[in-house]
Length: 244
Ligand code: PGA
Image (cartoon, rainbow, N blue to C red; front, side, top):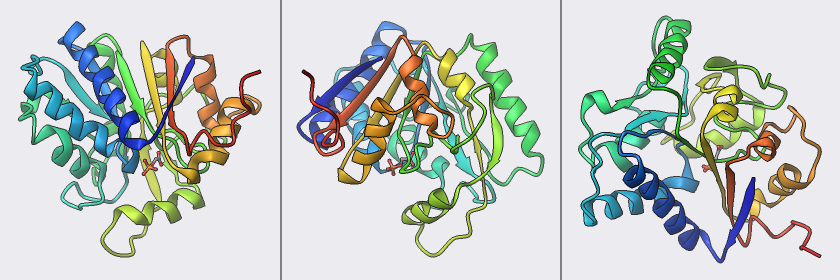
């Protein structure tokens, strides 16, 4: 795993966009898993500008989402599905066969998990996973204490996730469970990009990069990934021990 620190969120977002675009240029049929959230929002906007501006073939890659709130329909502006539609799927005019998102209101959630796992394995696995990090160290909805051996699964959300998650919704929303790719996907992905930004992520980034590797802080698992990159802005990196 490598670490890169940037002056601010904007510079970091540009580098992240450049990295994702390079993945698509080098391997047009890449399978790319994307997180939702405040952190990657600008990177995805810049990515669509880069791909369109540079005429990169973006009709062959496959986009899958990292996670979704259970019981939240895709039309809800706080859903991950809505986020990916508005940031990338719409602007890039991706075809229906090019993306697979979770249906948070599916009656059979286990079938939803199985379908995602099958979709990924049929395409030969994930080339690049772009993830954020929760204040509790979650990756997607891999909440503290989750098994590192799981593929896609449904999970009870941690209190921190339920509280912090309110920021995505227009009004107070009951958040109970999430559906998420598992840490096994992260370990098996060819490459992983984790982004963190702002003072509010400084404490968890110190635990992630300098604490014990422990399922109680799921994000620590990225340290075992040989092709993992952690991008931080100065604020998120502010508590890290400086290099000798
Ligand atoms: P954020 O979410 O980018 O909105 O901070 C990150 C996360 O909870 O994974």
